[in-house]
Image 1 (cartoon, rainbow, N blue to C red):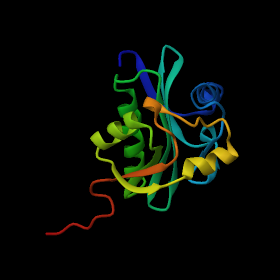
Image 2 (image 1 turned 90 degrees about the vertical axis):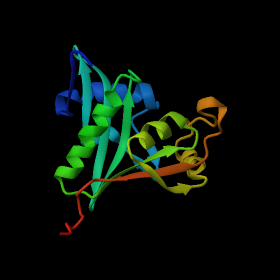
Image 3 (image 1 turned 180 degrees about the vertical axis):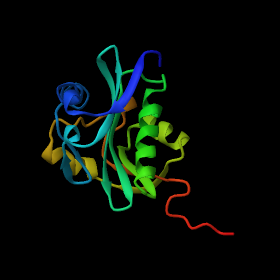
Image 4 (image 1 turned 30 degrees about the vertical axis):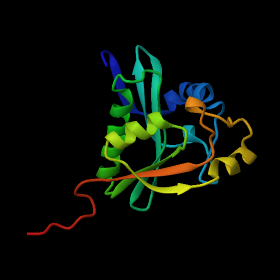
Length: 169
């Protein structure tokens, strides 16, 4: 990650973030867990190299947990996604959150591998969630990675060490 800067998203990043989301997600909105979200309006972190944004993580805080809303990198397998995820996890811990959770789809085997290697566990499956989302956002493809039909949302979660846990002595 030479010459790569990861920093908190600022107002100056807004145009680049919107363009990034349009390119990768086909728009500025995502439909997840039966809710329409606008990641560009959420707090997050960007990865920038020579002024070019190539990685983005957005999140929101709910009670004692952080929901990772989006995590994308234009440079796979180069540590960018891991660096962005680490920043979100550190932010969550600094705010006293006990866990970080996220949603991916049943076809996204790369994401499932990525998150599980980093301590995330599948805690819930919502059958048909993507079918419901497609009613609101018809641009969601029917088939995804490896020819797998996209139908369901998988919820993954990671407990943050030491947060919300009492010490025993």
